[in-house]
Image (cartoon, rainbow, N blue to C red; front, side, top):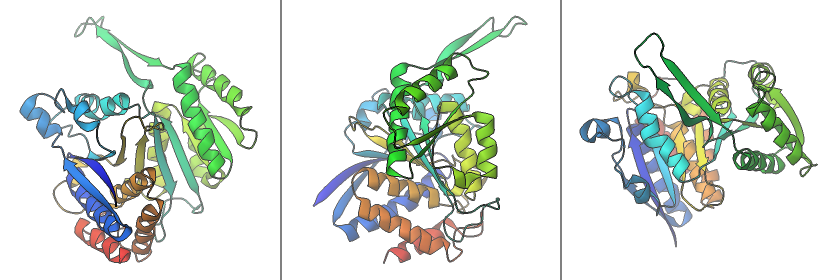
Length: 347
């Protein structure tokens, strides 16, 4: 019997509730499918930071390294800890240390979910560069607190980093409908984004079976709203991908349906799977968080681990749940009720 060790980081706010829901579903489908999941929980969070002065201990990365995958709930509680500390203290270090350079975020409507657009027949996979670009953390501030204060934030784009995320996206397009949209702002950013466009054209020659179109970020934002059905795989830098995937979440019914995977493609370190919605402090601890995004992220984790049939079972159970109207309206159903419906749909 195959066995997988999973690091669980529930994190902050609703992360604890949705991680528990996802783990119930994952454990159930594992029993049905003949493999085992062993979860080890880590208390790293903003509360951990307030107690210790760090989002995770100094040996946190090494503690996570032996695991087959990481399931994360949410990170952040801005009223207690600045987001710049919580993000750079936990999520970004994990992504970078484990070379999780490909963030994958699917955007489609589950049955029974109504999006805000007239269009409903869309299926977009957004591939976001996840370890460099605009979120590299290079820069600084001088003359702080004076009228001469200066803040510099430097984007870092390496040929290795740009080429590997584009190649990953080309491969995803090849496995899907053979269309790739590359997103930049090369008319205004004449160094980094022109460079990205150049590498895109160079690699396109190696993928003659993939139709490649380059868009500026503003035009792509409009296309996601006006013609989402025209898109297949979308690849973008760290910042542009971050923004586009929140827009993608909006058109698929909201952040409660937004799943994601932070992938280490060569599997030299664990990959991490998480819902996009964050800690949602306004609804934390009241039991109405939608666990669907976390459960969907769990299905992506199983697919990455090679358990495709089990991942398909979870997605089918989610669809049987939402088509009944359960979990489709924010705040209507309780977390436990949605989880129970998904579990029942698995049986």
